[in-house]
Structure formats: C-alpha cells, structure tokens
Image (cartoon, rainbow, N blue to C red; front, side):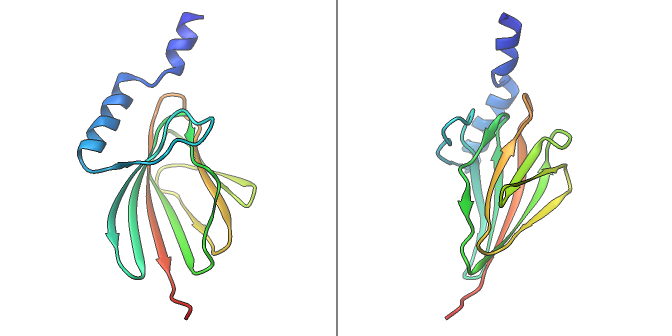
Amino acid sequence: RAKAKAAARPSLAVKAERKRLIREGFLEVDRAEGSEDGFLLQVTTDSESWTFCHVYVPPRSFNEAELLEENKTMVLSVERAEGESLCVVKDDVEYDLAMGENILIRPGQVYNVRNKSETSSAMIHMMVYAVDRD
C-alpha cells in the first residue's frame, strides 16, 4: 500500500518543473475541485485579435469546464504529453491527444482539458482568435 500511495504523489521532477515555470513567469490558475493541482499559464502574446499562451497541465489534473465566447475560436496544440494521456472534452465528447496533435474549439462550445497521466505533466500551446462583431 505504501508504494501505491507514493506513486500517486507528484514526483520531485514534476514539483521542480512547476517551481521553475513559476520563476520563469507562469501564473498559477485556481485548482478545480477534485483536480490534483492547478494549471500554470504564461501569456506570450495578447493583442486585440490574438492571444497565445503556454498552458502547463500537471499529472492527474484538469480545469473546470468553460464555455468559449461566441466571438472567439481556439486551437489547442499539444507540445508535450505522455502518449495520448491529454484529453480534451468538447461538448461532452472526449478526444485523447498526443504530442503534435491539435484540436479546434468553436464559438459556443463547452470544453475542458484533463491530463490522465499518473506521473507526467503536459504542455499545451493555446491560440485564441477574437473577432470584433460590432
């Protein structure tokens, strides 16, 4: 039993990576209820039309489901993940993604991201395009 509990805890490497990313300017996102840990977010570009971010997803962690605004379109690109352990739930349909794969979130869709890996963190590049509909 002690081994099973030890395996479920974040490794020292995952903890060290999280600390390093925070030092490098990543911001902590509130942990969703039931999630192992909160995501980290680094905005690299934020203009009137485009927002680009890196999203760090710890092992056994997920975010709350979100509704994408009607004037926005989002692409999530998997920079790093263990196998197909990164899962995007879009309108109640699960999509398992591996490194190098992308998924499009359309305006008005409900989505969330889940890292099903027990030991490895994942990294996503998030691109959001906003259209001014005035």
